[in-house]
Image (cartoon, rainbow, N blue to C red; front, side, top):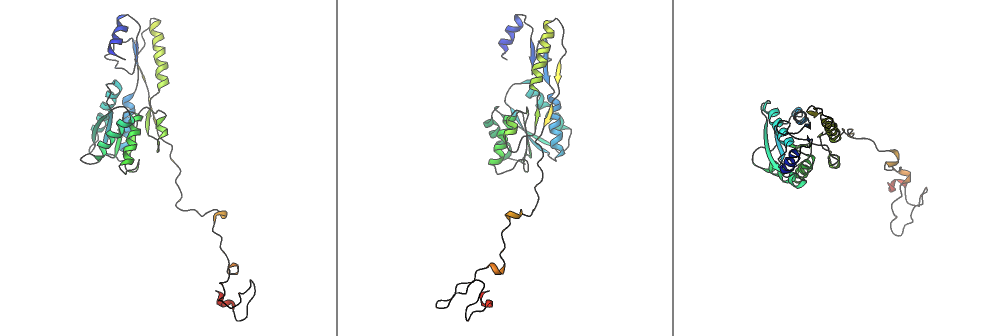
Length: 252
C-alpha cells in the first residue's frame, strides 16, 4: 500500500491491520505474516541434501518486507555450510524477468550454479524457460525452486518445487485480528506456518518390457512363405505341390 494512503488511514484514527508487513516498523494495530524464514530454510535444506553448493538467488526487484526477509534467511542458511556460494540476480516480478535473470546467472562468468532459488513461482517459470533455452535440463542439470505455490507451479513441466504460502489463512487471520481490534482488544502478532509443495515422484519406467501379445510382429513359418517367382518359360510351382524339374529345396 502507498505510504500516503497509510498516513491518511492512521491520521483518521481507523483501526489498521497489516498483512505481509514488518511488525517492528508499521504502526498498525496488528500484523499478520507467514513464516518466510522457515520456508526459505526448508528450501535450502532440500537443495543441500541433493548435493547443491552453487546457488543463484533470483530476487524480485520489489521493495517488500517478505522478499527482504527471504534474502536474509537464504544468506544465513548458506553461511553456515562450508563450500557453498550464492549469486544474486535481481529481476522484475514477471516470467520475462525470471528468464533474463536466470540466463545471466547460468551463462555468466564463473562456475555455473546448479540450483536457482526464485522469490516467486512466476520468476521460477521464467527460470525454467532459460534452462531449456540453454540446452540444459530441469532438474537433471539445474534445480529450480519457487515460492508461493500458485497454480502456475503445476502448469510448468516438470512441476515446481515450491513453498506454499497460506493465502486464505492469512486473510482469515487478518479479519479475526481486525474484529478483535474493533472490540477493543489487542491481538498478538500472527505468524502462520508454511509448507513445502513438491511434485509427486513418477513411477520408474522399466528398462525393457516384452510387448503385448497383439503387438508382437507375426512370425511366419517356412510353410507360409511364398516361393520365389519361377524363371521365364518355366511353370510356377503351386502352393503345397511341386512342378516338374523343381524341388522344394530350390525354393529355400
